[in-house]
Image 1 (cartoon, rainbow, N blue to C red):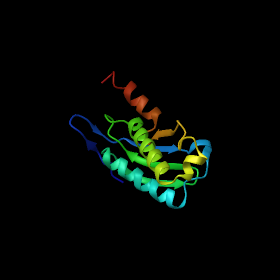
Image 2: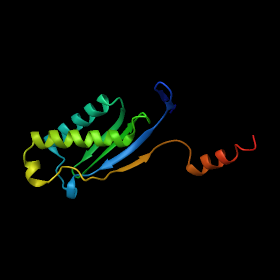
Image 3: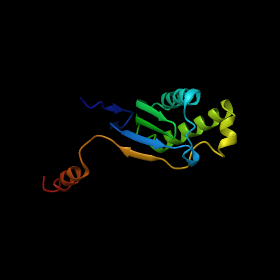
Length: 132
């Protein structure tokens, strides 16, 4: 599979991230109409922020996304925007969420970069540059 390079005014990049987050108390509230609406909101935020959704999966008690983000925007800002908008809209549209949870999401999330060479290989490459 060829690597898709993206660019902005001064950076060429390929920055894909696997992100996972959970509802408060890991409650199983992400199903049915809530799950479908959450997927719509996530897609809207990613498009609004100029990122690229690769794949999305919502489980009853957690969310997985694989997304590419401009490094000048940052994955942290994208996750904050997704969690903020989805919490506000879902709690407005589905009142039982307000009574079950003080906030929809936990403050934390997991993020890992994807693709590229293993860290040890990149480290070796960088260390070998001095003699060139």
